[in-house]
Length: 128
Image (cartoon, rainbow, N blue to C red):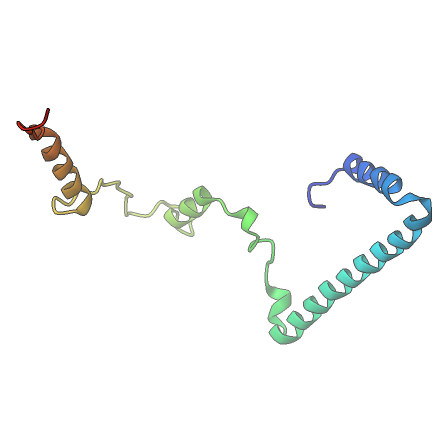
């Protein structure tokens, strides 16, 4: 639950006991229970509404497969390169380096900077 371990929750509870005091603690504990109950009802309502709007396809969806934490680019590339029967596809993946565009803005700025550094420094003979 949000990376909270039992020890952290216990520490938060102890701090709450000392800060709130014994007279206010039951009131805030009841409010927390009410909030958790409302959040659970909202989540269940959203799930029921999604099920109603999607129809029977809702139960067919593999939600764990859509979890972004399951994203592994190596697995995706491996699956894309391997056929259904396990054979590697004929197309070999080649890595080619892009050649820089000689008219690109970066290279133009770089050439201008090099030219400015190669030119002699301006000299004023009338300066003291």
